Image (tube, rainbow, N blue to C red; front, side, top):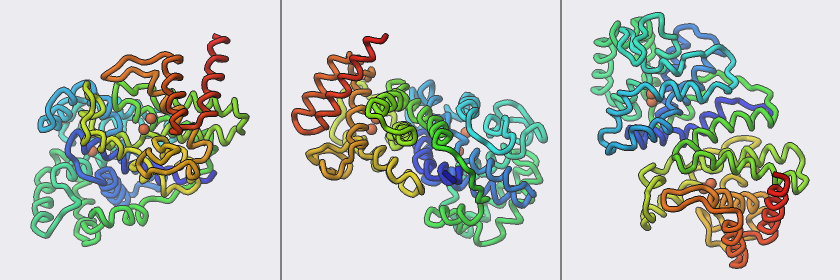
Length: 408
Ligand SMILES: [Fe+2]
Ligand SMILES: [Fe+2]
Ligand SMILES: [Fe+2]
Ligand SMILES: [Fe+2]
């Protein structure tokens, strides 16, 4: 299939941005604005299309490791201090770089994400300075820093004057003089500031970023989405294997039902991305030790809606989006977020629902231990008897699992 990988990333960025919102209180479309600024300055600096294409990808993914990092440190502190905690640790740079080892970049982007907090005068996490810092890293830092300090989606004449003053004042300190010069070349045009507004940023990105389409097989796309499943799973220690476990189980069941290779790969992609919207749910809720209250349940129930928003514009992903985003719908219409009914839910959506519940039951949660196959099947059969989930699929899961155990 022909795909522009950056379009895939930009779609996923809608939910990836929630990571920073949760930790830093950064507002919507942050990574798109970082990508827009870095790309437009890179053009000024004569970077070629392939490099700028990779730069945009790095911008969108610059803080992908923050979720795991949060688990270690930031989550222990109250939200007002989280920004401070994050700024003081460099692990998120290393993890963010590490997570993307398998990503099919077109050029060599080694250390670009790792050094995205380095400053021109060598006061960043790794004390790199001047030309020791990859240009791409400095461009990410420039856009990231300005958006964090000034919230660039919301600017006016006076604020722009202040931003200009700030950039000039930090030339040769935080920022390289070369990047500062490019900034003044582009920021003097009204379109620069208008493009950064929430209502225009998506179009502006489309107009400006290199449109490079690549032929990728479904197998390669599955591999790329697996990177995202790791990012999603790392959101919480309790879901460390959730999407991965679901992808494995859906592959096993796909083979049991004799589905062809492409359908199985698409099902795995759907499994990899099904809980993408969970990135939009605060860790305070996901990791809560006690029972969730009504307001928290209401917020958790939004996650499949966010998954759908992220995936729905991707050409070629239409059936994947259905299978991924219907996993909390129930046959009797009591599920969420749409309250779809049996006639709206195709076989693969039903399969995803059953396996998602099965996978979740077997995992440990803050409030209970993981259940055995037998205990999980009891719950699944009970739900099937109530007309919530597909009876035949539940029986098949039992058969396949029992066969699996015999061969172990
Ligand atoms: Fe960062
Ligand atoms: Fe950022
Ligand atoms: Fe879910
Ligand atoms: Fe799930």
